[in-house]
Image (cartoon, rainbow, N blue to C red; front, side):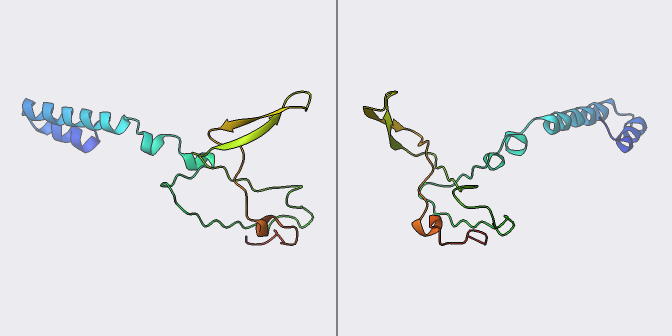
Length: 130
């Protein structure tokens, strides 16, 4: 692709060397423009609901649940789950007969982090800014 004004310049200029230089410059620009960039076009963690942060970061989260119908009950109809990677946890599992159990370490942890007691308590109205 060469713009119209540049084509006119090529037609007026009689220098073959200059024409070749200009044409190769446009070709190089086209290659750079058409090259896929993972940073610009790749899948982003945020699009999947993940947020990346440095190790030992602290998050302050807020949720606007004012639009939820008042008859919905937290823990019964909806629930907040926050998963952290990297993480590890031990899970106790029973066998098929429910008699013996074993501890399995999951890396990353397959369970969400435990939320503060005040947040999960029934007396807290969740239909607000949390």
